[in-house]
Image (cartoon, rainbow, N blue to C red):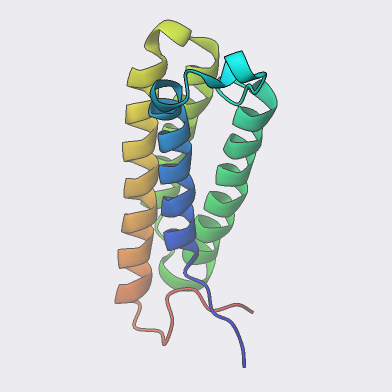
Length: 129
């Protein structure tokens, strides 16, 4: 049995997990530094999440482009979102604004890619080759 993954769904989930980490985690776990645990604003963790989002997103969007629809629109949306995701790492005063913009653009890119792949009328929006 061959496992088929919807990489756009994985990309959306990764973006949502990143947004939850960045936006809600500081509010929920403010007591963790007292316990010696620091995952809030942990550079290694944040850059790892950004790297994971980039790998999943790039695979999904370039696969959709190459195999299914040949539209650069999802790739451009994703790229714009990713620019804001990187900017949030360097501009802490605008961190949440940049994060919100990044998440909306990245999720929109995956959703648009999914819709374009679905329109191509193949048996699966993201079958593996």
